[in-house]
Amino acid sequence: MAIRGPAGISISNTGILLICVCSLMLFIYTFRGSISEGTSSIYGSKYDREYKVSEVLSAAIYLTEKAGRLVRDIREKDALDEQSKGETREGVNDPLTEGDLQSHRILVKGFKKAFPALNLVSEEHEEESVDGVIPPSLFHPDVQKLLKSDPSISAEDITVWVDPLDATKEYTERLTQYVTVMACVAVKGVPVAGVIRKPFEDKTYWAWVGHGVSDTLRDMHGSSEGDTLEVIVSLSHKGEVEDVAQKAFAPRQVHITGAGGAGYKTIEVVKGTEDVYVHTTLIKKWDICAGDAILRAIGGTQTDLRGDEINYSHNLDPKNEHGLIATMHNHEDYRKVLQAAAKS
Ligand SMILES: *[C@@H]1O[C@H](CO)[C@@H](O)[C@H](O)[C@H]1NC(C)=O
Image (cartoon, rainbow, N blue to C red; front, side, top):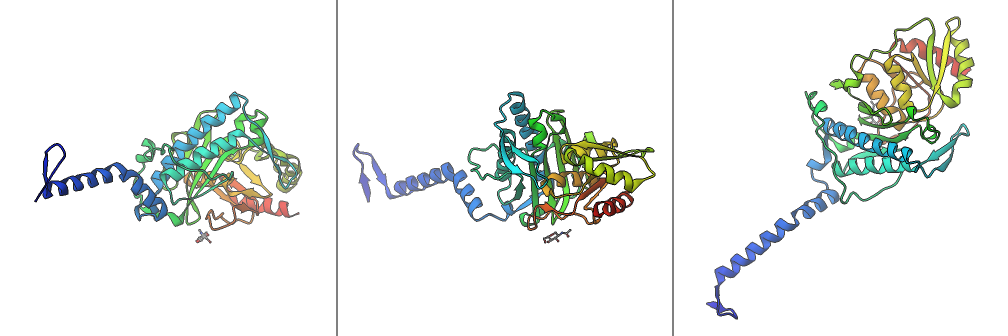
């Protein structure tokens, strides 16, 4: 049997079947992107739930640098649009700026686009769609050079900590040397890779524990321990720490430097400008995870004041309540003295 078309074209059954099959294939071809995207974000394929540290670290470098450019542009254009998030426990104003928010969006959207099932904790909160977001590169050339073993890890075991803008208060005061953008990768609570970006110096410090570090961290061994002990603390705590530390370390001379930003202070210890970074009050884990990874990678140490390592699992509280000490040398000696001093 054959069907006679209007223009007198005759189409056989086989012809109809062929047209149907072709149309179906064309349909699937056209919409394959959205079909697979929908499936992966709703159900999550096996592939989508396992990630490699090299890829998450590469994305972290790419995204902190991109976010850092916005942070700098907003400062240079004076477009901060400053608001207040309230006060810290110490009664210091805790500002929020357009720099924090836009940096947060770049980081969170970029990570979520590349790794939909990732556990991500950011200092700022704002969930947004990742439609149309350009995914970050997952292959940083310098990270690629360090590839040895790089197994796929279940997303459930990975936590990425993001600090879109560390030292916001100083950012509003144009003390831009203290400003950093940070991202950190923890596996089962242990920091394995960290990035500290200084957008106003155009410098990126990153480390992959057990694999290697950025050029900016190569040959950094901390201080050479002069006669005077150099201690770096928050600008807001300088006064109180000064008296306590001077008594605690006597007769050794102690010099206290106040500085903004946890990322900045850790890098000062790494560079050897400071011997000890100490913090005696509450500090959030997004402030300290990247520095922890960097210190681990180059032979330094970071613990709370009790001497315990900090667990960066997303299943735990993002608050670190027991203080912080970061050093490149003689960690336990300094920690014991400072713990005793902090108690009294
Ligand atoms: C960190 O805490 C998580 C959740 O409680 C736990 O599963 C993990 O083993 C801990 N990691 C370490 C290194 O203690």
